[in-house]
Length: 494
Image 1 (cartoon, rainbow, N blue to C red):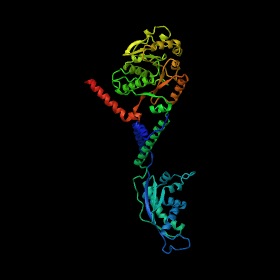
Image 2 (spheres, rainbow, N blue to C red; image 1 turned 90 degrees about the vertical axis):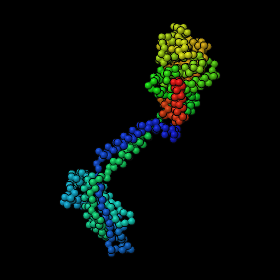
Image 3 (cartoon, rainbow, N blue to C red; image 1 turned 180 degrees about the vertical axis):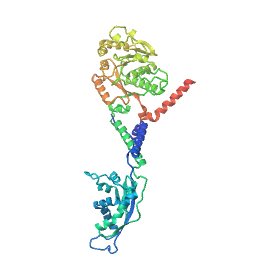
Image 4 (cartoon, rainbow, N blue to C red; image 1 turned 180 degrees about the horizontal axis):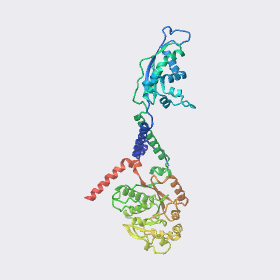
């Protein structure tokens, strides 16, 4: 199957799943909100601004290789302030009584925020302490901003101020030139800087949106089921006799059991009726060169709607004035008696086995111009009966009486019953179910059909869900059918 998609196809595909996309996106936002709000510990920041000042007796043209001005000193100071020796001194400074009294700094608080060195029980990790400190320079100035982020607002401020306290001495020891000063003390900021609940919720919702869209696209791209009649025609080079929409209209007024709805029922959707009229026209053209108008209707697999299609195609042909016979050739799982609500005490199996006369097994005018022969009692050897000489003689006799004969047969990939009729019928109509029948199923069915040299009249795409359609019908068809269905009802009311 051709899995090429246009932008319109992709948009339509996503719109058909819009409520799923909205739901997953909403849930993604909720999950991210919950994690940010209740599972991630908030972090608090404090900052202090410091500036570097060079000694006056050091000139910019000094040739001894020393750093000569404040701007040059800033980057050097930043590296020195994050050195292990400075971190060790910082831990000692922040545990002094002044910090304990002012900020409530305790050993447990430091352990909670920074952890301990592996293999020890009380040695605070200087590596974690360093990670909590960020030092950034201010462009085109000799100033730098020290920011500390921890799980405790007071601790963040305390570490900032402690670092500003020990920095001048440590820098002096390491470099020996210039001086560093603070502008003001770091303040305590009670509002957490992370996590950003709103930001994370938006990111979570967007991530969920991307994931659900990718999953939908992947499922559609990897799905080899029949999605469009045009792809079916292009792949197999066989005509499309028609498309039949999924029966999902007027749910309160009609029985939605697809195995029972027929064109003569009340409130059958207008587009369904028009689809079968189109199929009738195409089948008539397909049989125009055939000497005997005998059609086998089958499908690759069970439950793809071939019995319903057989029934309604027969009714549509009968409504055009042709004398039509519908034979239930599914001697394993009879359906036409159920659809038409008629008896099945005797039928095709009775005639082939010569237990009943032919005329006694045909139920006349079930619908005007349409006669029906049910399957009859289930025999032990269906394939042999359908391929028998007696079956050939029956069809030959009937073809002289009826304009068209339609035989509903079992699925091709399940049993060989349909192929047993290859030599006595004009061709086969293959019913495939939209987004259910796969190309693999059709490939297998066609191999069997071609092996017995049975002519394929064409495909009927059944149960088409137009929510997935991106073609003509999607843009115009729904409105067209709705308008004419409304007009038809208004005419009936008058």
